[in-house]
Image (cartoon, rainbow, N blue to C red; front, side, top):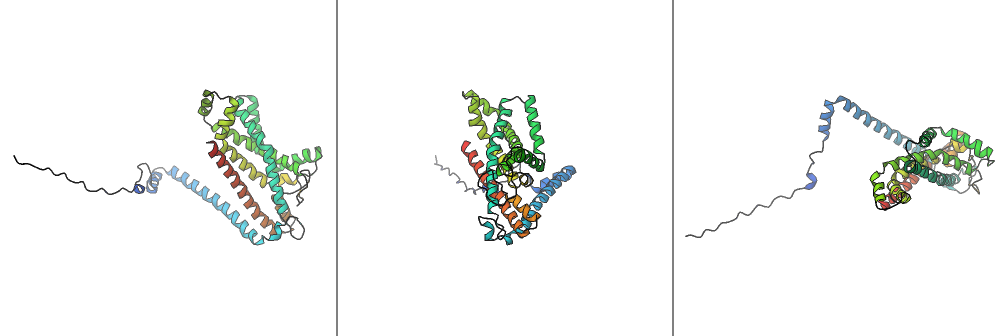
Length: 311
């Protein structure tokens, strides 16, 4: 009997597959989308309107920012950042300091009240409660009131009735009242977006309602709360009408909150309206835009840090 030897065929080495070139089955190309849009003309029209609206919005923002930079950057000079404002330098530094003071103190008054009011309406009060409905309607109404109305109210109440005169405190409290509905409504929506399973899980582990709110619910809604704070900051920094009637137009840093002082927006408005130094007004506009970007960036950074820490 002859011995037979079976030789196994050595498999040929397979080529390595480039994972980056693998196209998912459910990914649609632009050609597929265009073919689908041809079959649905209304979808095509809606898509074009959305793209056109986005392009117009982006173009408008870029045009305003670039125009302000072209007009203002050549007029930026070192004397505009001197500590004391005089007729010779038209320094905007006092206005920058006043802007930071008004923005910070307005948030100190508005954020706790707005957040706690939202917590009460979402976590404690029933949604069918008449009081809750009245508060929500009042907040929505106050959000749409022009700022000049807040300015007249602040002038009649804080400046005249309380006898404070034109003061930073009158402007701060007026700003706090103005941004309070915005912070309250955004916080309320952020709390509603937290899944009920978070609350049920916390209760199942034996945590009380107060601990659940401050340890589970608020950290989960932190990004929405920070968004409301950023919107409130932007409104305070760019406000003019309400502050003209309450804080005044004095271009100096007051010795106390009961003294008068103007913010950057009011300072820019005064320079351009009275035709004192239009070129300085454009330079102030550039600084105001950069200040808003920096403040929003810091608030966004802090919000992301808090969100990562609690998550």
